Amino acid sequence: MVGMERCVHELRQVAGIGVVACGECQTVDWWDTRGLVEPTAALQRLFGDLELEGTLPGLAAPAPEVLVYRADARKARRVLDVFPKRVWLRAHPGLWMSHDGERLLLAPVDRNLVSKLGA
Ligand SMILES: [Zn+2]
Image 1 (cartoon, protein in one colour):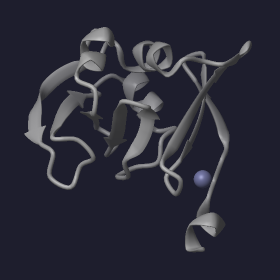
Image 2: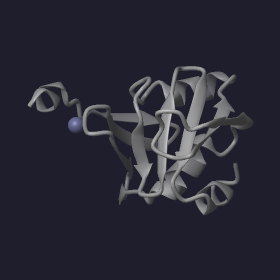
Image 3: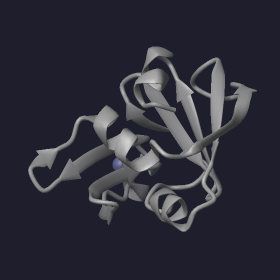
Image 4: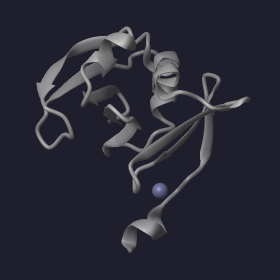
């Protein structure tokens, strides 16, 4: 099991949220001082102010369409930095995310989720 050896489950703090994101298991856990945070709330807090740049067909993505958000501000880049780059992570049961340091990609399995995020 190559994956097991490469697992890194490190709690990293950003913008008041504790994030444990692992590119090997493709999972994300969201924490605050009281315990686990509901993923929608965490996503909204971290990514709610990003600007939608456009959409892409979901080539090699876990959903049919990918939404692309720009992360121009320093805060936004700091947020992206706590997630492994260029892997799909299951940020929520209905939503996958990925990033390259400058753009956030969201691949919603559940399209209703995107409007809930205010994005
Ligand atoms: Zn892992």
